[in-house]
Amino acid sequence: MLLIAGAGSFLVQLKGKTGISAVDWVAGQFYHPAWNGFSFYDFIFPLFLFIAGVSLTFSLNKGRSLGMTKATLYKKTFSRMIILILLGILFKNSPVPFFEPSQIRLGSVLGRIGIATFVATIIYLNFDFYKRIGVAAIILLLYYAALFLIPVPGYGAGDLSIEGNLVGWFDRTFLPGILKQEIYDELGLLTQIPALCLTVFGTLAGEILSRAWLDSKKIKYLTIAGITGVILGLIWDLHFPINKHLWSSSFIMLTSGLGFLSLLLFYVIIDVWKIRKWAFFFQVIGLNSLTIYFAFSFIDFRFTSKKLFSGLYAPLAEEWHSVYQAFGALMLVWVFLYILYRLKIFVKV
Image: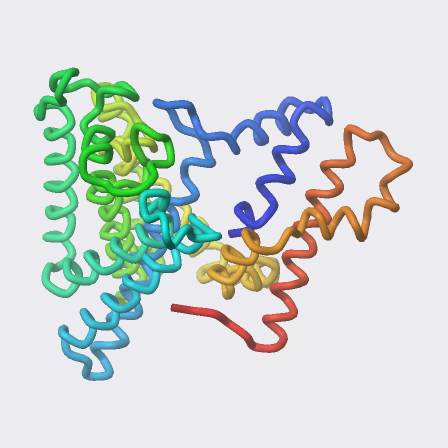
């Protein structure tokens, strides 16, 4: 959320200004590849889906400990899914053209999280740890087979180009409204299927953390899962390219592996080594992630930053003005969230 709420923009503005190649490389990681390939920016949304699965595990376990039935838990996650889908449509289309439904984009980040969480709930409540691995593996293999074996009119089978892939054809044929990329939508229909596997894998990580194991055993399992995911993703890439637009099976395995390793890193630092004070800055953001996701769309923090701080950096080199403006916007975002934190205002669905 920190990167989405302004830190990413700040780092991008640094590119080409410092003369430090490492800074330019980091800034270059905040662009999505045109088609095949992978950058750090591609990892942010999959990590959201993965962490949704981690937190889902604790939420469902708590519900069951309170005596909630499966039906009650299904109902709660289904309601949450509907709310997130509607909020996602609002976010992606504001102002929403209510009287021109053909101009509404239905695919959204929030909607994808809601759907993935609901399906993962069903899978989690009905399958054990290893069976969930099997379910995710079957989904990813079937998706892999579909994109290579099902022929697309005018292009045939196995065409993974921007124009000829099955995902794009499916969106153009069956998804109403506007497609983000015109000939396909990376948050469209078919890509939802492999994407939900990230949340399923997240439930595995959540179960590892929730078990009454020694820290060393949890670290071992998270490490094995992370390395295995990354290796399988890279091997699969040799035939089914890592591609965020298609949410390819190799992309899912790579980002799942990175999700396990990221969780491992912070678990060791925060829970094992108990080095926690540094995390307060991020905690303020994370506790109101939905708030800042919407606020950053409806409030122009960069404009406010310029109005408040441009007088301070006006005498400095003009090429750096955008950097200072972006940094000021980021600080305003954090102060806004800190005020909500102090007031104990937390918006959740």
